View 1 (cartoon, one colour):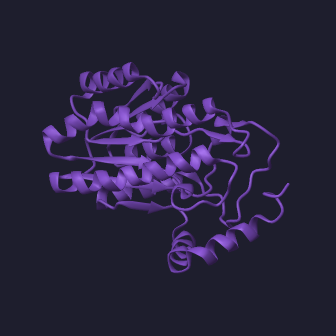
View 2 (cartoon, helix red, strand yellow; view 1 turned 120 degrees about the vertical axis):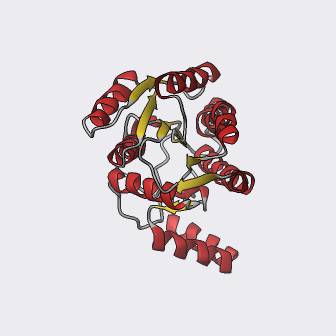
Length: 269
């Protein structure tokens, strides 16, 4: 998608963090962002920020666990701007706890928010993109969807792994039809994801990865570049994560042993 000017980009979770940064990055390219967020005030704030960059924009309240809210988001977008070109699915929650402590409702909620929100989005927006034979999907997964680096966030790891797999399968189907697919796998990014963390026991949060915390504005720019270039995989912490993936592919048993060792005594406590 070489020319982004005048395109319309729908972004869920667009009121903060990576979603907000991407909405504003698109706005700087002349793209019209539709900012969908469960927090209507945040969505409207980003709408105003985008307008200050010289483009039309809309902020829409949207609960990604609601089929009806997705239908309304589609309808508002088409009524206001007459088209949809880019759809970014970008909402996550993280329940934290030992595997035996995580309740079933934490699993259900994670699947509903992290994975089924992508399915709901596909059901309302994909027919539009298929009919016009163009467009681009962006799904935000995580480094945790590429390899496990902790044990206390199983629902997050599971759902983000699923988003990676769904995205790759969608690329097989959609690229021949003229529709791009990008899967974003962030490492640590300075967002408000902490608001979406729930603790179910006193297990510490672990990460044997030595990755710096990234400014979300840099991630937003990466997403825009990926849409323009029709790039599938976006790794925010590129070389370090690639090196990890290569080590795992070359020696799965040795890699797992090293990950366990890096966690130290946490798993045993």
